[in-house]
Amino acid sequence: MNPHSDTLRTADGRTALRMERRLAHPPEKVWAAITDPAQIEQWFPSEVTVELRPGGAMTFSMPGVSGVAMTGTVTDADAPRLFAFTWGEDHLSWEITPDGDGSLLTLVHTFGDRFGGASFASGWHLCITALSQLLDGESTAVYPDSGALHEAYLEQFDLGQGTVEDTADGPRIRFERQLVRPADAVWAALTGGDEPAPGEPAPEGFTAEKVPGGPVTEVRASEVLAYRWHPEGTVRWELRRGTGHGPRLVLTQTGPRGFDTATALAAWHSRIEHLAARLLED
Image (tube, rainbow, N blue to C red; front, side):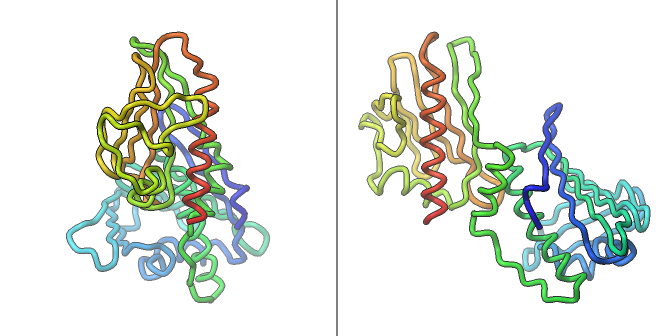
């Protein structure tokens, strides 16, 4: 189960995660394991119902959680070759091809949230590991990701880079990154345990080398902190809802035309990488 064989591609606002695994079992056996609800629930963390035909309905319910279920529609059901369906706004395609005395299983998960790619990849990595164990007749005991697998995929897919956008008010640096610890833990790491208040200097954790600090202009614990680094510029940290592992960090820096965006971009990249490494250690 080598994550380095997996790919992430984005085009026209949609992202496709592609994962391939060779399984030592014939296509018919693999087909049953990915389409039979009794087998699916042994490797996938949801109870699934499916009408196994194109246009058939699907539901996905978390065990022990009532009243909340996602729905989908089967788009392809060509046994034992192709099983595909929608899952909310996403689309999943499972293709099985004969490979010697076994099978090659190819999953393509298409979605809109590019920065959730490492979360989806690490989640499917664990699911397919459990699927392989099930096919081998072993216990499907897979340990949850501590965050290390997520971070390995994030690095592989190069999801930690920032961008510089040109706006009517000047340039804006933007980073978006999925984090691997709860928002309260991220906030504590950034504040150092001292709660900031409007008008006070921004805590060191929210600053970066070669980017001046300044007075806090907005703060909501575990959600938002913004400060003025320049009379015409603001740094803003937001911890938004994420994809399973923790909050989604969105960091922006705005400033006057002509400010050194290249230096600031590198400084913020280094700062966020340091934060991510510390969270992983914790």
